[in-house]
Every structure is written in structure tokens, then in C-alpha cells.
Length: 192
Image 1 (tube, rainbow, N blue to C red):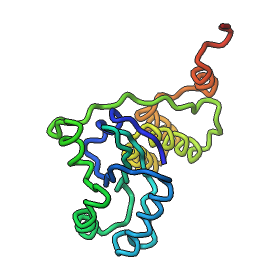
Image 2: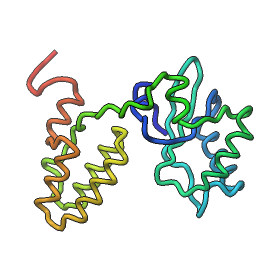
Image 3: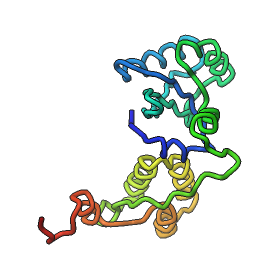
């Protein structure tokens, strides 16, 4: 479970998820309980579960966002469950929450994020290793769809050189030393 800001939530226009509002107690236990309940109801299928769950605070409430990306579920049954359990869980769709609670104009395309920095220079040059690092960086920056698209394009390219160019379209390729300098909050050789 990752903690996100409302600004990060606003940037998710165009995606869909289930939001549970006003959560308290042990959030991991709540997520596990909802996954179990939705499995028993036949909503989550083939042993799948919501794995990409985010926590955010808004208007004094702790809320959970269950991303629907790459989850095998019966959306019709989920819609019925959401309506039937609204009083208990305050469940709503991300696509309803954004315009109604956060004032997001859903007719505007989501703002394009800058390419995130990705420390690939100095890493094991195996293309699958590089794809994994770049994919993880994209997902950590809320760009899961771009990670999937990048992987598919690389596999179809059939060339190591083309693969590196494709990775560069999605992330800013940096070195591990650059990332360490940024993590420390100062340039090498600079003292405080």
C-alpha cells in the first residue's frame, strides 16, 4: 500500500478504481477483508485480488483507492456491491470522486507528466533487467500504463538498440551515482 497526495490522485483522470471513504484502524487488515469479501461474492475472479491499493487523505478522512488495472473482476457485480454497501464503505468510483470531490474537469486530458529519472547507467545491461528497472520507475511515478506499453513495444522491436531508444522515450536515463547524489540532497563534494 502506498500513500499518495490529492495532487497525485487528480493526475489519475482517465483511469478507474474503487474508492472506499472514511477508513480507520489497520488499513492492511481492511484491504485483506475487502479482497476476501469480493472473492466470496464472485467479484474478484480466478484467485485475483486488488494489489495496487493507495491511501490518501481528503477533508479529514482517510480513503483507499483500489486500482482496477490488471485485476480480473466482474465489473457488473462490483457495481452492484458498491451500491449495496455504500452506506457501510462509502464506496465510489475514481471517475466520480475526481469531479465531484476534487473538482477535476474530466473533459480535459490529464496533464502529461515529465519523464521520471531512472538510474540505468552502470546497471547490468541485460535488456530484461533494464526493462524491469524502467518499468518499476514508471509504476512508482503513477505511470503503470506507460510501463506496460513500453514493455510491449520493446518486445516487438526485436533489437537491443531499438529497445534502449524506446526506454529513453519513457524515462530520463541517469546513472546510479546521480540518483545517490539526489537522495542525499546535495552534490558530491559539497559540505554543510
